[in-house]
Length: 245
Ligand SMILES: C[S@@+](CC[C@H](N)C(=O)[O-])C[C@H]1O[C@@H](n2cnc3c(N)ncnc32)[C@H](O)[C@@H]1O
Image (cartoon, rainbow, N blue to C red; front, top):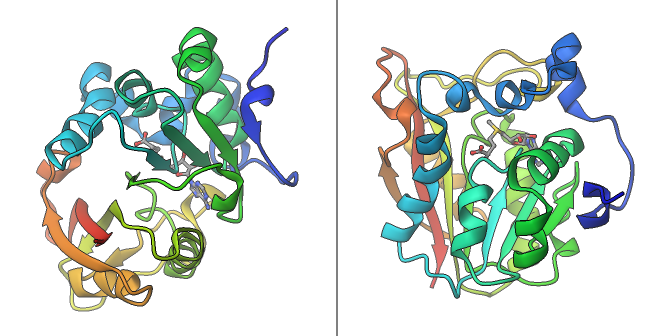
C-alpha cells in the first residue's frame, strides 16, 4: 500500500511534537486542524484558510514557473492550493511533524495530485534545507516564527542563508508584533509545551534577516484572519518580506 513515507526525505528519527502538543487528542482524525491552528475548523471557512496564502503570494508576483518553499508546511493547508497552481516539481514543503505531513499528504491532498505535481517534502528538526533538490524563488512561513523562540528562528535563518547562498529570493515570514516596550520570549517552543507567544518589535524581527545580509520590507497586515484581532499588547501574524535581488 502507498504511504506518505515514500514521498518524505528524512535523515534521522526523533519524537514527533504532534503527540506532545495534542496528547490524547492526537487520535482524533481531525486533530491536525488543531495542531496547525484553528482557522481550518474555527471561525474562518476552510476554503478561505486554504486559499489566502496563494492569493497573497500572487499579488507579490508568484507565478507557476516559480519554485515555492512552504516553510513549516504542516498538514498542507496552503500546499493544497499551491500545488495545483505551480508547475510540476515546484512545491517544496518542510516541517518538523511527520504526522502533520502524513495527514496532509494522505488525507488532505491525496496521492493523485501528489503524483501529478511531484512536490518535495522534507521532515526535519534541524532545518535541513539541503535535502531539497533545488532552491526556491519564493518562501513562505505562515505562523511558524510566532511559535518558536528567537534562538530557533535565528538557527532557521542561518540554515536558510547557508542553503540559498547568493541566490535571489523573496521570503515572506509572519511574526507577532509587540506593542509593549519589552517583547516576550517563551522559555520553550510552542509545540514542545510552551504556551507564551514570542513577540518582536518590527526592528527586532527585521534584524534577524539583516544579520544574514537580507533586505526587508515590513508589510504588516496581509489579509490573515488574525490581523483583525484586537489586542492592547500585540498585533498578530504581521508580515515581513525578506529578500535578495
Ligand atoms: C501554526 S502551523 C502553520 C502551518 C502552515 N504554515 C499553515 O499555514 O497552515 C506551524 C507549523 O510549523 C511547524 N514547525 C514548528 N517548529 C518547526 C521546526 N523547528 N521546523 C520545521 N517546522 C516546524 C509545525 O510542525 C507546524 O506544522
